[in-house]
Amino acid sequence: PEGDYELGDIVSYAKLCRKERQDLFTVDDFTWEDLNMDAVFRRVNNCQSTVGEQFLYERLHRLSPRGGNDELSALCSHFSQNPEEQEKIMVLLARLGKKASGGLPHFLEESRIYSMPLAPLYSLLAFLPFAALPVCFFFPGAGFCIMFLSICLNFYLYYRVKREIQGDLDRLRTLSSLLWFSEKLVSVLTYSPLRERVLSCLPAYRFLRGRLSGRMQKGYSDLELLQEYLHILTLRDLRIYRRAMQTISAHRAELRVLFESAGLLDAALSTLSFRKSLPYWASPSFQEKNTVIFSKLYHPLLRTPAPNSGSFSSDVLLTGSNASGKSTFLKALGVNAILAQSLFTCTAEHFSFRPGPVLSSMAVQDNLTAGESYFMAEIKSLKRVADAAWAESCFLLIDEILKGTNTVERLAASQAVLEELHRRDCFCIAATHDEELPQRLSPQYENYHFQETLSPEGITFDYKLYPGPSNSRNAIALLSLTGFSRSVVARAEALAGKTLTEKGLPQR
Image (spheres, rainbow, N blue to C red):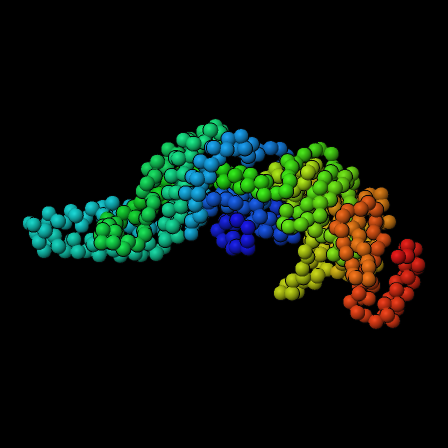
């Protein structure tokens, strides 16, 4: 569903996988924020279950190292050809549902299990109150004493341990739903590779099936209240919990297969739904050549996007005035490079590029608490991108390079950094307001620009990509349009003309 909702437990599986992987093919936090990928996730997300949402969120962080088709793509094709099976699985996923506690990824991690006091004796303690009953007939004093003490001990243990493991008990209810779903799935799913994996993992959790659902829920009827007291008296929930955690510890790999299988199915169906919601889409075309070719490419978050087409055979330098569309275009490229390598879906009629890690340096911010200036933050962001380009063939996006310092040093540093990135085995697309950079970086960087139209009524943009560098400047025109006096505007135009003449740049 679309909308600005809290992600909560949805991010937990992605955090776990990031700890395990820690490679360039995981979209890093800076790029994720630059490209507003949380909003992209919400746009794609039509999952029926929390497990599916967790898997989809992680999937958008994970890029295919070779860019080849994988099981998600195969499942999308399978369900497109089997709509009846698709409907049946969607119903099962809806019943798996979105739990208040969707913390199953917690069980996938090698984490410490709470050490329960007297845990090996729970079976004996559960039996003791009932064993004291016959003793009461022959030795009433001793029998009632044993019964009373055992009941008190069991109640004490129950409430003390419950307080410590309540979070896990909630997760076990989700696990129970996952086990139910997995058993139902094998009778519906005809995609054999996934079905066989699920079948092979179910026996490890057969003991827990049906014993976890509804655990520790407060009853209201007399019968439910009596059942609750009986569970407390016999420590049933604690014994089930102990057995469940032992099973999980011994068969964590099987649990991961069941979790990822359900998540993969939900993510595939959500991807199909996303595709249907688009005006048009295309499967990506991956190539070995370091070029980018796209036709009618647009940003999936825009309600009325302005599609662009182009063919980049070398690194690219984008120029253009403020608000002309440079940043949106960069984000559209970045989002599509991620969607292409994660969901094999592009918001374009055609999108072809060499797959690889996607990194950006765009929405740079200073860090006042750390005493870090804006320019220092820019430098660190560029260093992160440059380091990545040393290690792997990357897709790099840089917006307004080094705008936080003086003109002379900005031009020199920008030129040096972009020349260095050009020498590395990556594809770099950078946006700048500096009109001298296109000249300095030619022919290493191809030049493209966005432009605007000025009229007495104001300024309008078509958000279209044009070849060559920009020679338009709207800052002074905007002074006039926003009400500055004619003398201020004339003075600004005179000063700008003088500077352009000194630098040998064309006049407006």
